[in-house]
Amino acid sequence: MGVISILVPAVGLVIVVLVVAMIMGRSKGGIPGGSKGKRAKGRDALVREANKQLALNPRDPGGLYTMADIYFQEETWDKALKTYELLAELANSGQAAGIDEFEVNLRYALCALKLSMPDAAYKGFAAARSIRQDNFEVNYNLGYLEFQKKNYEKAIQLLQQARIQDPESAAALRYLGHAFFRIKKPKEAMTFIRKAIDLAPDDKESLYTLAECYYEANQTDQAQRIFNHLRADPVMGPEACLLSGTINTETRNYEAAIQDFEIGLKHQNIKADILVDLRYRLATAYLKKNDIARALPLLRLIQLENGSYKDVAVLIGKYQELNANKNLQIFLMASSADFVALCRKIVMGYFSRARIKIINISVNKSEWADILAEVDTPKWSDLIMFRFIRTQGAIGELIVRDFHSHLKEVKAGKGICITIGSFTEEARRYTEARLIDLIEKERFTALLNSVDAKAAAAATQQKK
Image 1: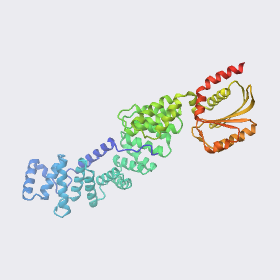
Image 2: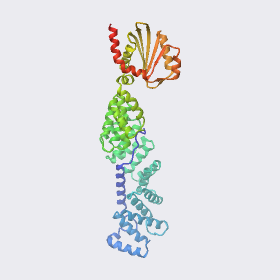
Image 3: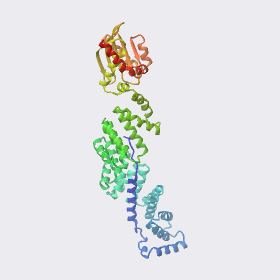
Image 4: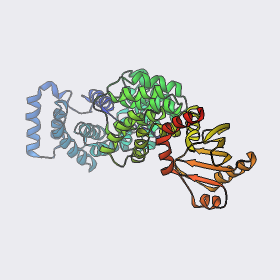
């Protein structure tokens, strides 16, 4: 569809924070030769001991590790980050014997995540993975960071490994499903997103993405049920309304589409791109219902805020004129019955002081109507055929040739071909030596403006 791309909103960040918290809980006291036993001495004693070691050697691995561990436990992330970074450098150069290099890089990366430093976090997790590739925390977080970089194929590989180590991780399943959706594999995405929702039912963004998966897989009924459920949600509601309305528009259920878009616009703090799309789609749904008066204000609002948005300027130019002329609306947009009724009125009032009898009407789908009439005036009588063409575009020679053939079939003395658009030069040249009048927009607009008065006068004439 490409209608709407998902973003990673607050709910995703909450999941990451929870996973990081879980990881840190696992990490406490987990370093061989580390501080679990030392912490029994008390924080102050540990700090004094570490400071003595660092006074003698500012790069003492034991002293640095003790301080890094204290900073980490107390959540002083900036100091912990710098200390673990120095320890990682020492370990890499072989100057930190007895220090767990994997754990140092892991904690460095976790601190970087806490400080919103994704590049540093990636560096730390990658270093840790070069030592151990079977660790959930490392594979999950690297997968998450690759997802954030939009490297979805890499993210899938890493998250698949994380899932093997922890099959019940809602976060790993979540981003795995979202990554598959981003590479346009909705069926694979559904499998993982459904499992993630089972484990974390409040994840509304994943529920929304599941509906998108159904939509992409042409399972619109399932998609529609989820979108309808999410319409009132303060975060996902506007986007759910947009896609629900889009589905209803595609199935020509315009009343339901209008309701969807109107509900979407009632939300607060709507993203700018979603807001303009809701307005545009609501306006076009109104136009499908021939409700120009409600569509135009929305189109003008869009034009005011974004003058180049899609075909808004063209629609305003077209429907502004229609809104001011009821007969023009009928001619271009009304049902076939109303269109033909208008054409009859035009024929009845076309010739002044004439008796007119319509003897045949034929309609070609919704493209044009041919009306054959006997016309009797004080000066002449003849069989005249009218063709009314429902388009604002240019009419070419082929349609005029077809009209001429029809004239000969019914033995009409003259033809009058009428459009609210225009005729091409080829069409005009074709009619130069033939008894066909071409009526274009300017003359026809005048006819439409006076048709009611002329029809009334013609009716009076017929009664005499």
